[in-house]
Image (cartoon, rainbow, N blue to C red; front, side, top):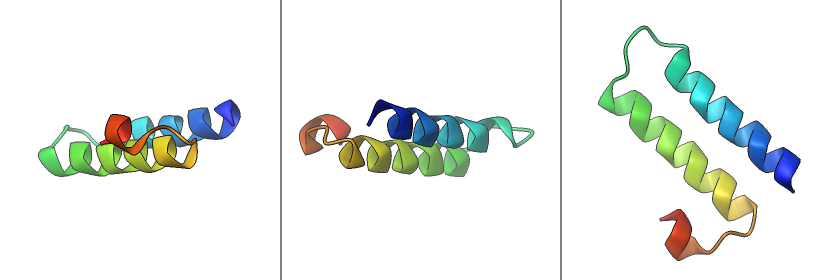
Length: 49
């Protein structure tokens, strides 16, 4: 469970690091991926939101 969560979190941070500048769209994509990862790891929806 933790391994999958950490992989998903790493991918979402690579989205931010892969671009030259951090934009609102990049942050929104990363937050969306982080929320998905937390929900898949059975974290409460209220916390993930």
